Image (cartoon, rainbow over all chains, first blue to last red; front, top):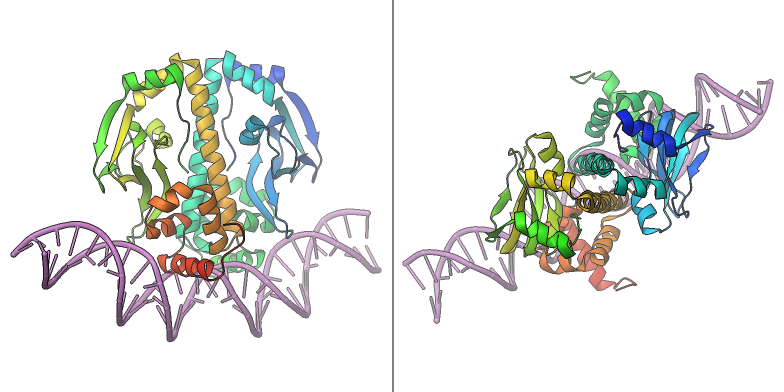
Length: 189
Length: 189
DNA sequence: CGCGACGTTGATTTGCCTCAACGATTGTGG
DNA sequence: CCACAATCGTTGAGGCAAATCAACGTCGCG
């Protein structure tokens, strides 16, 4: 999912000093495809999704981010190339935005920052690896159950069609999967 | 794919000072599932693959690494948990191994190291994101063509069945895809 | 109250997997 | 140097999980 990286101690104070709070209404966009990302955001309250839009109009959700998660596009921020992903608030949300420039400065001046950042990226990469393995080896039902186990918070707060989009299946398929789980309650609630 | 991160300048010299060269024969394993990873490896010469083995015996290739690439499992090295991925030499290879401990030390003592490492992880995470998008939006043919465009080197050096495994399709499917591409030469060689 | 989004259910299609058999290539030991 | 085995890629037939297309009930909101 997103980068977790729940900053702590004086590090948090530092982030706060260069971060600007921003409120988002439900449905409001924090980033648009085509832009060069100038900020990363730390979610204080609420829930957001990252998604891409294909030419044919289909949406694909890449990740969710709730309280305590980071949402950003470091690769495109660093290379100064237009991103292709949208960030949208699913719930009314409050985020702290830190500019890409400030983040670079912190990496250079505060040794611990770069390390902590690297740890977050490690987790992100590992999470994506798990996603990839799941998509290779599992059926839609297995993957939905893993999702429930890994992210119970999101399962409760995210509309079903968005979960389907994140899992990479059609909404109808997820509906049928859930029906089967309800009829034949799988071991491990 | 793997982390690219082609170290340069005095940074390279530093890595060399703590790295031990290791030769690998074709088919030899550099890491086994179940182990706690103690090293990361920089590929000097040759070609390796990272894969997992399912209970049912099926293999899934997660990435390839040729000259100039890093191969490691930082998440499991850091958390000291057993990895589930194998590293195997596809060609006779030469790698430089750096211990996880030395790497940690370098991150703490050399500011630039942590930053460079973070950049590599960014690229890795971005590459996996592209893989995920491809698996969501594309057919087997589209994904094979993207693979050819993105990693022409690998396409030439990796056996076809391993490319199929990396793409997440059956070998037979990839064979049929290639036949169609040959019959009806797609635009964009 | 009526509209639109969401979830559900059914019918049909389809892309890919599985199973199976067959040349071609590699490489290994006699 | 050659026979043999093993691996690899190819091709065909059949099946299956999930996508697609379509219709319907429900809920929340204007």
